[in-house]
Length: 321
Image (cartoon, rainbow, N blue to C red; front, top):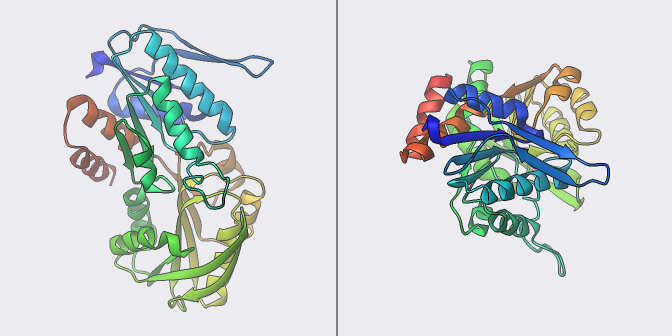
């Protein structure tokens, strides 16, 4: 495995890529990404990839289009250098929220991104907690979507031990996610009934369930501007929650998000490092960032050894306890 596997880091996920390499006991591949003054991008590979299994680690968060183009150009470079296989590891998959036509004459941008990755030469895609799991079906190549929920559940078990818990979904669409976390924590669920008049704007309306006198854990797949989340936190406290934790897989945290979360009086804000949080952690010490490196390393290991992915992920979780 070690002799035929090369892991490259592009600009958005350098620290995560190094953690993955440390988990696997391999050296990070040599790769240079250049951005020219006119906006063009060049990805230069610093070592031979002929016949090798190449893995690019790159989240397509802000700047979304630049990060996506880095990945596409890197894939093209490997294809033209006769790589044996090219695997795009995209911990945060940009454009995932554009997975359907919500109104007439709208694009399905996540399908377009899937087509671009395939056309560039990717043989496999690995993602984490896609906003809509059916996006896997947009690919005609193998696509593995790994959940971070067990990592988040393990952490919450430790910090809320002995407390009376309730897991809260911020909307009806997140009920399955909330129920899975509730089963891990042996807790009931509650649901916030919200309305979204326009993108990045949400109004919390009603609460289905009881949070009075309990520790509430609000769970979502991503937090962008934190408007939805903070309105939900305020409602939970108005309904009598003693403590509120907030957790998500992807901390996009754009615009006023960090400032809003700082003012929300949370016990803890939990996210993973699918998006690099180094700068946000410096400003927001209540943020707990959980590394997904063990899960991605286990996934790469299972692919390279043709072994069961579910068994490999379970083993990674047990080792991480």
